[in-house]
Structures are given as structure tokens and as C-alpha cells.
Image: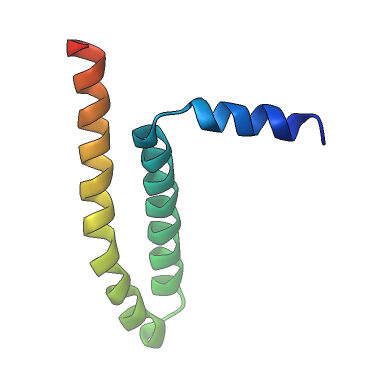
Length: 78
């Protein structure tokens, strides 16, 4: 395990910022969506809290879409 850490850190350093942000936003989007659905399953008091998570989903979707478009732009034109 200790020999894998420097390799992982060097791979992370070689990644573009947009790749890191894309992975982070996709992970956070999945976590928020799963959390929202779990709160809705538990009943009415938690369903109102799940509605508050809807506010966080739209900016995450926007960031994710911008990063995906940027990756396709790089793939096609560069």
C-alpha cells in the first residue's frame, strides 16, 4: 500500500484541473442525488429536507455539463 501512494499522487498531479473537477462534481452529484432519494423514502418530515437538496443539484448539473462540453471540445478541436 505504501508503494502505491506515490504512484497515485504522481498520476493525480498529471491530471488536468478540469478532469479533477469533473470527477469531483460527478461524485458529489451522485452523492446528493442518492441522499435526496433516501430522505424522500423515510417519510414526510425528511421529504421537506430533501427538497432543500434540489437547490444544490442544479449548479452541480451545470458544472458537470460545462466540464463534459469542455472535454468534448478538446477531443474534437484540439
